[in-house]
View 1: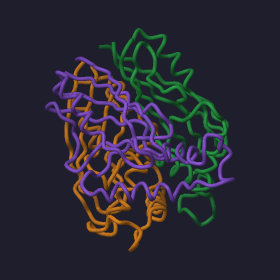
View 2 (view 1 turned 180 degrees about the vertical axis):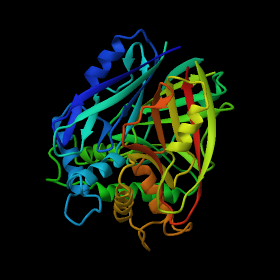
View 3 (view 1 turned 135 degrees about the vertical axis):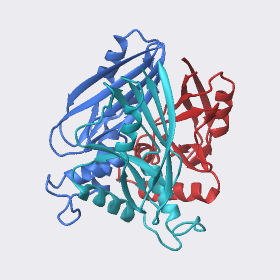
Length: 139
Length: 139
Length: 139
């Protein structure tokens, strides 16, 4: 049994979902691990991780819009406001989604369903650098 | 240290929670692993996973009803509508819950609390086949 | 490759977030594991786990207040009421957050971002004892 760790940093474009499936798969394909478990952890609390449909881009649009309405910005809504009106909603949206995902690996590939992709869900209004900590264990 | 992977497919009955604790435990009990880590990953984005109370069935009913009100169906609410009015709400409810769960295993059994069960949360209106990818590592 | 398991019980103070990063780190530091994967599982369905900002305590206050408004208590709202008006909302808030977190470990330390802490999110009104099941695998 072997393990590897790796950090990858992505540039988001502000409030939206960024498909990171490709770069994560590339990292795995370069390792000599046939079967195992991949874990992805996001080192931030105003962006998060989700598995979502990668077929229709409208799904990503609707998902983001739903979260923006469910967790509104606005003066007087939150005590925590000194990092901007989009910061506290971003923390809440992170708690409502995932900070971490683990996905089984078989035959050198992720056990994703046909229409599944791995996304960074950027909750802040503006572009940010977001670092993922990756860990894989297997043989 | 050993590992095993396995896929199990369940038939859901449409919008509701399905207890899958038994079949998952059965798989583990057939393996020679005393202590380790089990990971469950659902290969779909319109159904998800949750740990919930297995004592009072009203808990499952209330949970499902709450999610149905929180993420309503309706014409004009979403751009993504070509797979039916229940599809986009299903994607949102999946993002709001879990696509994956990992549970420690000790003495050949899952480290679940007394009243905890593992559930597939079906978000689509109609019955679907849902596949879980299981991974266990331990000794 | 080695693994260790451990249960830790915390006393919460009722509806609020409790930082458990320190005790979890202490357990890891006492083990001879340089790199690996830590998994934390909460053995309850009316309290949950979240990664959140540990800098401004207002973030924790706002997060809790948001969840209390999003999932209200009230007569007639839920069928499941025999464990008190705060019990069913607690189950829903647990499903909306996490029952489990896995975090990579490198150089004997958790791969947390600078401002990230690990929290038990107590959803019941009154103080409760909450047990976490910890698992670490690595070398």
